[in-house]
Every structure is written in C-alpha cells, then in structure tokens.
Image 1 (tube, helix red, strand yellow):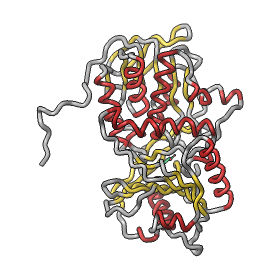
Image 2 (tube, helix red, strand yellow):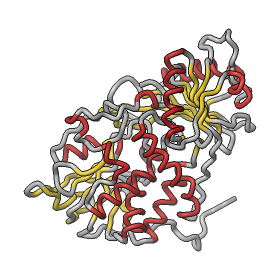
Image 3 (cartoon, rainbow, N blue to C red):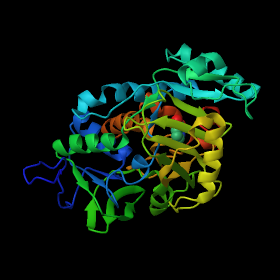
Length: 404
Ligand code: PYC
C-alpha cells in the first residue's frame, strides 16, 4: 500500500502566525488562496496571511459540484466568468499542478417555452462576447447524451438546450492545493485551524485582525469566507444583502464512463456530471431555508432521485455513496459583492451563492489588483456593493444553474 514517506515534501508550509502582515485574507478557500497567490505572483506582495478556521478547501471550495462555465445572461457576467474559464484553461501550467479541467461541454435543458427563450437570449449575449454557446434541439441532445429521455412522452419533455462546449468540470481540491502550494512558495503564510474572532477598526479604517491564535496588526483585511461572510461583516459593523442557505449534493458509486457532458435542468432543479473516476455527481437548488447546518437530508435525496430519473430513467439501479451540503451566501441579484467598503482597508469578495467555484481565479486576480493598486478593476466594477443603493443590479437569475 501507499504510506506517507518522510522524504515527501509538504505542498505548503505550516508557519507560526506573525504579529504583522500587509494583508490578512480571511478564508482559505479558492477565493482567498487565489487572491494570495496573485498578490504575490503578479504584484510582489508577499507579507500576506491566509487565515482559515478549519482546513483549506473545507468550506464551499471542497463541497461544490466542480462545474465551470461562462454562459451567463448579462454582458458583465459573461465577461467576468469568461476570464475565469480562460484562467482555468491555463492554470495547470501556471501552477504546475494538474487541476484536471475536463472541457466536456455543458448542456442547460429547457422544458418549456420561457426557458427556451432565456436560452436563446443567453446564446446571443454569449456569442456577441465571443463565448461559444448555441441552442440545440432534442435530437442533438440525444446524440450528446444517449441516456437522456428526449421523448415527447416523458413528464417534462425537453424542448431544447443551451449547449456550451467550453464548460465542464475541474478537480476542485486540486485548485485549492495548487493555489496553496503556489502561494506558499512565494512565502505567503497559510494558517489553518485558526478562527478570526474580531477585526479592529480605528477612525474608520482597519488596524488589526484578532484570531484564536493571537492578534495581528494589518491595514488590509479581505473577507473571502462565502457562507460565513455576513458574520465577518458583522465584526466591522457592516450589513450587506446576503442570505445564507445550504446547498446539498451527492455522489454515486463509480461506473464505466457514459456521460460526456455536464447536464443541467433548471426546471427540475438538478445537475449531473460524471467524474474521471466514474462517479456521478449530482446537485440541486439551495434548501428553501436560511441556516448554517451542513447536514444532508433524506428529503433532498428523494427529490434528487425523482428528478434524475425523470431525465435518465436508465440510472435507476445506481447507488448513492455520499451526500453533503455547503453554505451559499446569496445576494438578491445572483451576482457577487466585490470590492472596497465604507471601512478603509476592509474589502469583500462575497455573495457567491451557488457559483463561487467557477469564479475563483478571476476573483483572486481582480481582488489582488484592487489591493495592490487601490482601484477597482474594470472587470469587477459592476459588482460593487453600491449597486444595491444605486439600483444597478446585475440580474443573473436566468443563468443560475437551477431555480432557487
Ligand atoms: O452555476 O453552474 C453553476 C452551478 C452548478 C452547481 C451549482 N451552481
């Protein structure tokens, strides 16, 4: 068997917490680690700590269903997620760590006229920005996914789908580990099992971060904590329009490869993909209540099984291996909240709802640029918190993978 060898090098170091950092990133998921990595690699800022209350990637970064795509509805969303897909395409090379990006194609099914209309709309917005998306019919869907019931007799007949060839899945743990190793090689301190307990603010600006392992002096704190983001905001007395709800997922036993696209049905609230190990990964919409529990429920798998079998009845003998849940910090317009806040030195990269994984690289890149240059990069300018006061929402509900 494979047992740990003492000569194996650790991928990141486990340093002691220092008393002062130029930047403290709260949250050791993909967003926090990517921000740290790009601060160092693009801007030479290395006196940075990433503080994680558990183990890195233990929150949403290791719980999502690993889907990447850029087939959004608004021009702002398409440009943003497209940049992320492009960064992901080159990330294995950049980090020298195989993130296993399988660009297998992504299908969003339409079961009624209004969904089909939204798919057409998305396809046109995508094409204008050079993103490969088109609406295809049931016969083409059947060719791509022979297991799918595309007959007119099924309970929710499939009228068409938005087909997005560059979409696919990525090994999410590898992204965490790759960014962590990259950041650590630049001398960034990744501090695990350490909880942030407070943020010091004097005369309207950040002066320090308190943790369960001691206090840190810093002028810059970045909230990259997804589901826990409202709790961190409370530490500086800020309230943003974010509601936290769980999102459940599940995985089956492995079987031979048969599904070569990601399949999403917004109306049936389900998405399915097959991993390179052969397991089917399923997800659904968020649970319809706000809470911090991350337990799975029987209710979820019952609904999931019904919906999956409506799409692919041939899967009825498959057995589920595991189910879990993650926390989604959802905003009213289904777009993130990114950028500076009314507290000088306190930045947020939050409001990731059900789409944070795919945005990790572009968010890290943009947040690093914001911190290094002190101005909002154009690519995230639409996502500032002031949009809720100014009434300039970036409505992405029609591009969420399932209804919420
Ligand atoms: O936005 O593609 C998506 C997604 C998949 C699972 C949850 N959200």
